[in-house]
Image (cartoon, rainbow, N blue to C red; front, side, top):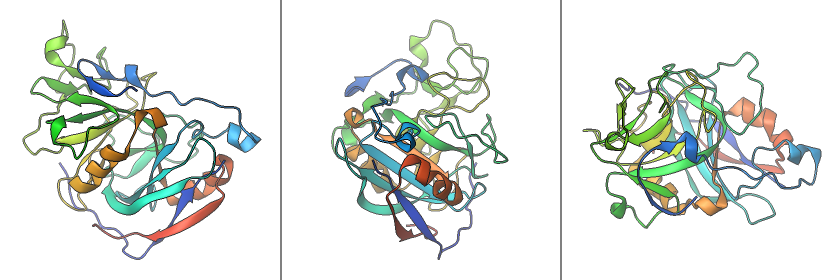
Length: 284
């Protein structure tokens, strides 16, 4: 399913510093119906009016070398109600889809141009800006601390539906809560390899789900350092547990996941007062 990818060990990647829901346990269908809305507060400038980051106080930034890169770096940022983004913690290695990135459907309104656009089964992770949906875990009580995101306990009944013509497409659902199953070959989340032992759903192609535009995009554990995914963003267990412990639904956390050139192009429109640098490496 996954293979190790190569990655430059010396690239210096600029990382964006951009200017200016529930908490508890959940069961049943999760996903497109529970997208976290980003409030559009009155902007201070025309550039801010275009920013898909408005209203968020937590940001997870994932930067890759290019659209065909399946290795990237992740760093967390936060800000008060008003003010600049501040980095939180160190950057960490993550892996992307085996074929790299493609423009997804999220909070951004960036025209894709000649870059790839995500479709179901393309082996690419979505590029753009996205809200986070539910967290999930096999045993939520084993996280470092109780998560402040909605949490779904994964059982042998839990699936994420990838069948394009299903009414439950792009949703996490427990099969025993559905009157009629209308999908085939779902992504069964209680996996023998434990890759979904902890994770977060990324609200790509949600809440207005478009059939065939891609489904079941997660933050989850990687199989091994450097091993790409089939479309998700993967990392080691300590890194993922740090993200889960830090993230708060009330702060409307968002994911900015882009190739470096797109980050540099979009930073002015989204309000970037400064860039900081960190070195990318093959794996942590």
